[in-house]
Amino acid sequence: MVAVGAAGFALVPSALGSNRRAAKRRAAFKVDRGTRLAADNARVRDQRRKSVQDALKSQTDALNEKKRVRLPQLLFQAGMTIKPATFIRNSVIAGVLLFLLLVLVQVPFYFAAIFAVAGAYLGPRMYVSRKRRKYQDKFLDELPNAVEAIVRGVKTGLPLNDSIRVVAKDAKEPVKSEFQRVLDQQAFGMSMTDAVQVLLERVPLAEVNFFVVVISVQQQAGGNLSEALGNLARVLRNRKKMKQKVKAMSSEAKASAGIIGSLPFVVATLVSVVSPSYLAPLFTTPLGNIWLGVAFVMLSFGVFVMNRMIRFDF
Image (cartoon, rainbow, N blue to C red):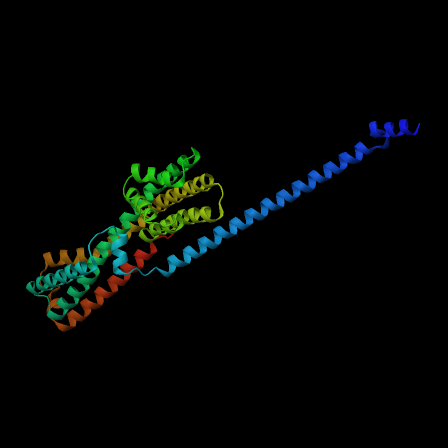
């Protein structure tokens, strides 16, 4: 009877309610395990978010520190192959030619010297800065397409290097040459994290900084690269739309600034045509030269203020 009772207790545990207790223990274990997994996933997400924020902050601080661009960096970022010494020589030649031209049109000697020095320094730099801005705008126009091409390549199973190689082969300039430069740097033995830093040195923009941070964090901490780059592509397109909207909204202010800035020269030209001797004292008398210089300084300051008012940074 003892054996029969033991067999009954072993084969029919429901008589003691052990199934109910076991189910409760299993449910409690599943809840604890799910809670632990959720906490671990949240901790991993927080750590990754913090690493991205730290990397982005360090890159942004580095960009702000490099706000003052030297001449070799300016030429490099403009996509020009001219050497700094050649650029300085051409600037000096332009200044001398401008001085001779002003002397030939009977501008006072000291005014001619001042205008020649200012023209030799500001003119070429403004040209290079404009070329640099156009280079960066062309790069930003093509960057979202390049990022989406990398996303498609990663989703199909291609390694990151092969996806970048596809972009370097099929994308438009200047994205094509810049991504090829990244591959060349990696071929010389640099890691992907260091190779994409070259891209940021060439095109120091916030959008490129986002791309570099995503690649660097993924190489160091891992993660879903295709999802991160897909989000980045959407952010880049939204920023592009915002810039175009701001450009359209500020076009009226830009037109007004251009009209106001050119109005003194237009009025002076028309007055000189109607009455040539009316403005002659400004150029022939010392007092007139002084007031002409004051007017030029005030006009330059006004143009600078209007330019800053219609310029928006993102």
